[in-house]
Structure formats: C-alpha cells, structure tokens
Length: 193
Image (cartoon, rainbow, N blue to C red; front, side, top):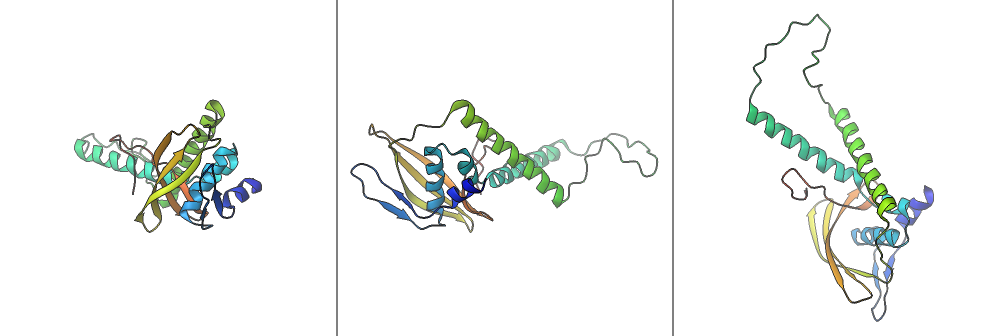
C-alpha cells in the first residue's frame, strides 16, 4: 500500500504528447492531484487511483443529501399520531430511530466512503480501465468553489484527434488534494458544495 500512496503523492507532473509543449504543475497543487489521478488510471494502478480519490468527500455529500431529503420528507408528513406504548423502565422503544451523535454520523460517512471505494474498484476490475494511451490532458477554467474545493474543466485529446471535456472537482483533505466525483442527489443533479 505504501508504493501506491507514494505514486499518488509523486512530484511535479509533466504532460507531453506529439507536437505539444510540456506543462509542469506545482507538486501538492489541485492541478497535480488531477494529473496524478489520470496517470494512475493510464498506468492501470488501482491502488494509486484509489489514493488519489476523495471517497470521504463524496460520502459526506451523499450523506448530507440523504439527511436533508429525509428531514424534508418528515416535515411534509408532519408528526405521527400513533399512541406511545408504555414500555418498562430502561427499555428503548424499538419504533424510535436511534439518536445519532457526531461519532455515529462519522461512522456512517466512513461506511458510505467504503462502499463508494468498493464500487470504484469493482467497476474498474469488471469493466476495465479507459484506454488513455497517447491521451494528453490539459486543465482550464479553474474555479475556487470554497476554501477547500476547486473545479476545473479537464480536456483530454485523443490520438485520433477527438477531444473530451469534463468537469473535475478537487478537494483539500488530510491526505492533500484529491479528486472526487460528486454523487447525484435525490433531484438528479450532482451534489456540489
């Protein structure tokens, strides 16, 4: 696992391609995080790709969206008018949801993150890696979303001349800058800060 983390942390990323000039991104920058992830995908290095993804951020956004949707649903239904059964002292009412404190919320977010990582790994194992041989990547339109989140437009140019543009989110975490894919909310739109 150390080698994959080292591969993700890396040094300056140099992008080259036929008839293109080199671009060097500052190590530890949001731009370098995107390039490290792309390089891990090109090299088919699953552990390095996982190290470059912010699954925890994706899980936090998904968890908060689900909680907001649940609260909205609960407020539409109004208070439930079921009689409260008399239970012996010290026995918890099984029909009542447990009280969730911050520690429980963090546990759920970590579980969501683990599930998202599992699906990411499984998808690459089952379907394979995208063919990025000979692809050059550039970034444009850097937009600071908040203190810890940056949005880029990533442009990939393929050897046959085709190009693909994609929005890429990067977040500063305890591990440094990591890319993340915003989960889709209940309204069908990407969950972004």
